[in-house]
Length: 140
Length: 194
Image (cartoon, rainbow over all chains, first blue to last red; front, side):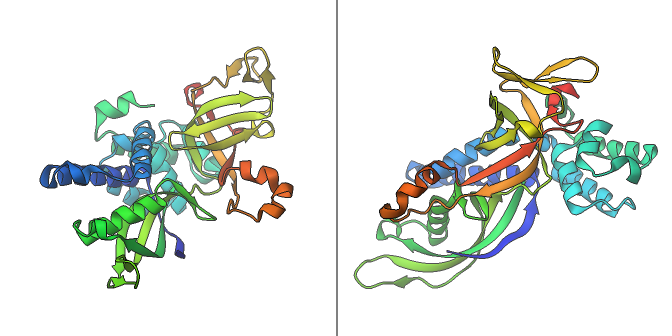
């Protein structure tokens, strides 16, 4: 084994959830096409995939859709407020609902952003989360 | 919380798997080898993300196994320092609070990293945060808790020479990857509080 690049990119919770669900679907299709013999996947893989889905379905990742997420990232990344990449990532993973929650994610929130800017950011986040309203209401 | 890590490895496909398409056999082998396992100084590997390159298969003499050099990317659980994560309280001890995620259990919030004014209730076996207003907030078991990652600890658990092992007896007990978290900023702590 050789590690070529320990951290090539960062993934949001939503991307991980989407990838794992895709893999699961693919396996399900294989079973349909090639018979149940192909259903035997490594046990450690099955375990971790189930646990990841269990965990991520308790987070904001279930409330996201690809279009709304891309829009939100563009909005936050291009915003003149100059968020760090990791701050955008954390906002995406948590979708903070109020100022206290946002304050945890962003360093020195109050000195960097004015009241109006904070409201704007929270609104943008909420509109991205609202793409699947019935789900986002039940989580958290 | 999750990253992509690029690795290369020599993957062996046994003759019993020759009926399966090569790509699928490779994916299965890589997942068998890495999924749900900690890579030292990298993090907890979750599963294969994609295969970037693979060489032609070579059959070694003596066995019918095909050896293929593969370059691929894995999804790895490796939160960065300062990241905020939500988990559940697994249990509390006088030393601090243990937190788990469904797929990862080795997270510990030491007592010094909890809110100022937190005390351990020995009868209930639970940490209580007495706020300045005189409220009592409980770190109850199974509550969803938000914490900040402060430190990470990798332990190399490769087997050691039995002759040397005595001095390292407790090294066997240590988890290969462990996170230390904190919980002393408003907004952190049990999610229902805020």
